[in-house]
Length: 93
Image (tube, rainbow, N blue to C red):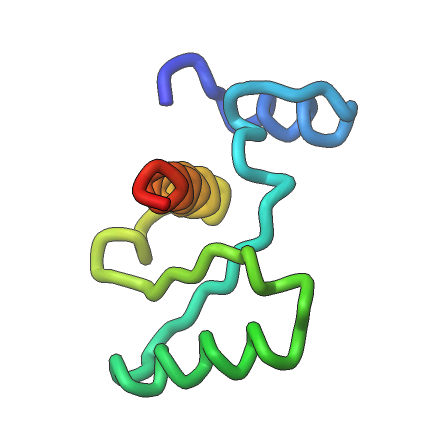
């Protein structure tokens, strides 16, 4: 993430200005940690059933790699993947 100094990113977020860093910040994301694969699927279904606004949310689980990322980096990465998956599904439909 070239050119994204943490202090500058904070200023951009708090000033209301959008930057490349803010990509994905308006999207909903549910992050799960420590669950077995079957529990992840059950949690996703339960959350989507209980919260209509979460039907289009991105879901992710932690990995050894992403546990070392800043939350903003994880949100941006998962949001990009989610948008790509949605676009792929729409092309197939």
